[in-house]
Length: 186
Image 1: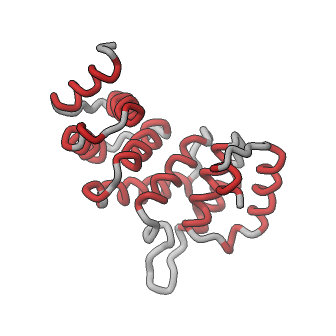
Image 2: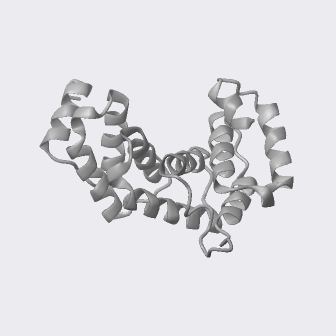
Image 3: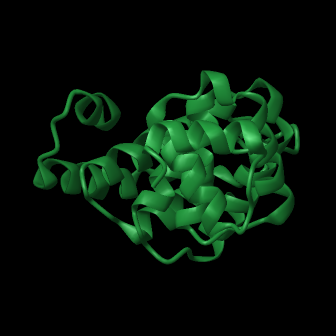
């Protein structure tokens, strides 16, 4: 419900705070998909519940009967939304959120070739905002930005250029030329 409300532009902080409180009571029932939707929605609504985000991160990192966590099985687009939600909260990462970010880095890196441009931009922004500057991950993002420069939208170009700069990485000439065209050389 929170995700649908936020996507529709409804961002009443009192409503989202109440949803966050109720979610804290039922956190043990959340899957990674649920957590991604809730974290994204709360952050989009400007409701930062550090304890909830930490509890959700702990919950989705629990191994299931097959040995892997629900976070590890999260689809890459939803993983990008979870990364965005956690980073947009602006909260210092607790131990479970830090572990979640490490898993999200692995998801991004291992799925780089099948990710949509919006997902790569979302991951890059989230990792840069959260101070996660894994050099091999950002090198792969730079290679992606260069390879797919022609299909990147202006907002994605801005985000990727900023995130790569924050991580101390740069892409090739094709991406740099696209950045110059989009930004007017600034």
